[in-house]
Amino acid sequence: MATSRDRLGTLEAEGSSGRQGYSGVEVVLSSDPATPAPLCPHELGPTLLFVKVNQGKEETRRFYACSACRDRKDCNFFQWEDEKLSGARLAAREAHNRSCQPPLSRSQCVERYLKFIELPLSQRKFCQSCQQLLLPDDEEKHHEHQVVGDVSITQLKRPSKLLYPLENKKTNAQYLFADRSCLFLVDLLSNLGFRRVLCVGTPRLHELIRLKESGGTKSNIRSLLLDIDFRYSQFYMEDSFCHYNMFNHHFFDGKAALEVCKTFLQEDKGEGVIMVTDPPFGGLVEPLAVTFKKLIAMWKEGHSQDNSQKELPIFWIFPYFFESRICQFFPSFCMLDYQVVDYDNHALYKHGKTGRKQSPVRIFTNIPPNKIILPIEEGYRFCPLCQRYVSLENQHCEHCNSCTSKDGRKWNHCFLCKKCVKPSWIHCSICNHCALPDHSCKGPKDGCFICGELDHKRSACPNISTSKKVNKAVRKQKQRKSNKMKMETTKGQSMNHTSATRKKKRRERTHQYLCS
Ligand SMILES: C[S@@+](CC[C@H](N)C(=O)[O-])C[C@H]1O[C@@H](n2cnc3c(N)ncnc32)[C@H](O)[C@@H]1O
Ligand SMILES: [Zn+2]
Ligand SMILES: [Zn+2]
Ligand SMILES: [Zn+2]
Ligand SMILES: [Zn+2]
Ligand SMILES: [Zn+2]
Ligand SMILES: [Zn+2]
Image 1 (cartoon, protein in one colour):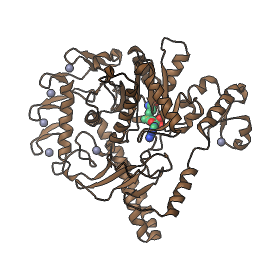
Image 2 (cartoon, helix red, strand yellow):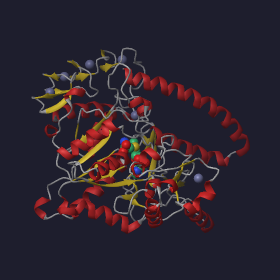
Image 3 (cartoon, helix red, strand yellow):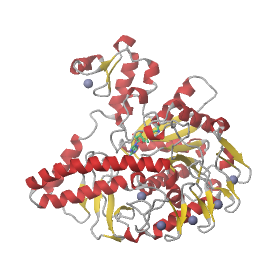
């Protein structure tokens, strides 16, 4: 296993070492604790400090931007690190922040929920327009909205099916597991003997665990959901949902919510608990890793000394090309071959027409892979040499001494590159490495346009959204200084055209990525 991870690490390191031409945006994690980051409306938690990188060089002026929203439409917060704001601007920002807060407090939501479940079925209504459970007194306000009635207890137990997924927003990227993937996870967690699951950004897993528990099946697992989607507050008591930002470890409801999480992690001296997370794929790995380390530290606090070597078991669900990034922060993690497919609402990650699983999404974990049985009927087999379950077509390479495929297809060994590569790649003597046959040898690298890594395209780049957002932010700053009206008209027109072309190109690239 270590061998295969090292190999991909080498591959990515090669990509990184060729990053002289890299341009984009990077997050700066070691910001000075004496200067706390400003707050933006969507989190009332600190923003993150970013630096723009141009042709491999960091620009000197750094800036704060929202940690959670990777789309300027969702949060246009921007502030230079050294920018001094006037009292008036600070006050205006505070007022704006307050106006962006959810209309109800956490305890008000709980109060409403308790009233709601007492209502007879005929009075239990849900406003789809406002995404809100209605009490009889509210109905007047919503009478012109799309309201559904007879909300059953079963529906209340599956809020992710009642609420529409916030997939249109890059910020939430709420791609929900189909029941098949979710049931696989629940069974796996139960077979591994876990009794508590900290669900970080996995609302559907959370509800399925609770459903199984209340259904009186053998699963006796409890779950706590941490998610930025405030709508879930309506359906859960304080001890089963915390409004949370996983990019800066911020609990919106302060110390009380933090204590809920702490108690959950530390119960039974921290035994029997696992964290399962499925962050938005556009999310930056670094801030996520920092957050997860904070949750690990919280879990560790409740430990006796002799347990200090133990790790909090984690499932981190993320695309396979992040393997080296994730293992950089969590060296004990390995990537399972299991393809988390059938996201209900994500066309790309469903079973293809050919029946071939096409999802790049995997589980990264610190649980020894030989403990994790993957379903043979879904195309997995056990490799006795690697001591882990792998995809059926993932062949054991005697030269690499591991099952090397990352995407489930048979990879071929290249003796010149000294590693296994995708079946569609050939060795290019000009570039001196393997690549797609139609690659351009002239380009700096035939990999990602944004970060220069070789194993993904721009459309799948972890930096894509941030770089777009920040570039837009920087552009806007400059734009303000110039003739505003004139600029806006021309930009509006050209943007429409460019974004259409960009969309088309992205579609083509995604297609190319899945088929390459
Ligand atoms: C890719 S979806 C994962 C959903 C999961 N597949 C399921 O079905 O349970 C990402 C989830 O993370 C949540 N999320 C997005 N940004 C977040 C943030 N900054 N902090 C916490 N949760 C966030 C979304 O609301 C969504 O529920
Ligand atoms: Zn309404
Ligand atoms: Zn093997
Ligand atoms: Zn090989
Ligand atoms: Zn080669
Ligand atoms: Zn070449
Ligand atoms: Zn990239």
